[in-house]
Image 1 (cartoon, helix red, strand yellow):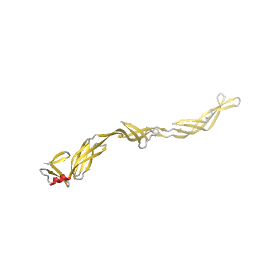
Image 2 (image 1 turned 90 degrees about the vertical axis):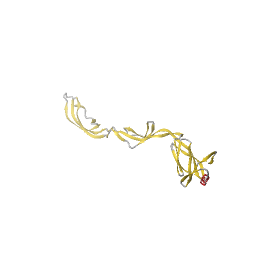
Image 3 (image 1 turned 60 degrees about the horizontal axis):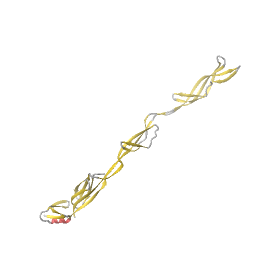
Image 4 (image 1 turned 135 degrees about the vertical axis):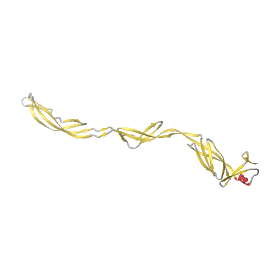
Length: 272
């Protein structure tokens, strides 16, 4: 029986693993220590590595560590969560998961959502950005593309020149023998025009008189007139258009971000 002291403990050696090149060999220990075992005991050493995984928002992490002349991985422990490892020659890949939260911070933009919204206007005037709230999310949306007509129509204003005639009868009262007063009801200097949506003022261009005569009781002189009027009339335009502007962007909702840290200890044996 072969006994060795590890720390304060006395342990019995039943078998020894050692590495020759890339091959791991096993030696069974019986009653005497052969030269190979003596060399193994003399030229191997067990070490302890403390390794910290960098703080991360990932609860599961892994890393590959290299141990030159590695013979065996004896023990791997972690301060929280679970730890597993795989050995490939001198490389050991350690994976940790299910750890506890080391700290939390509040992030006002932790959750994001793409949003589209629209605004309507009769004047085709829009803000470059708008505020948006939806389902607990909030933020600012910005103009996307140009505005467009979503409904209605536009008819421009129009104008044209109108020439028209009017006729009437004027009169002048007679005073005494051969006395004649001022003529009344002569053509006005201008008239109003309103037809088919066009409106405006027509001015007197010229007029003629004819058929002077006495009225029935002889108290007045009558005369017919024909007048020509001309002017520019306008028809106002019609604009019932509704303009629409599209806004797009991301809106956000806050939340807590959890961070995780792991500290592992690796006991391993190498060829010294």
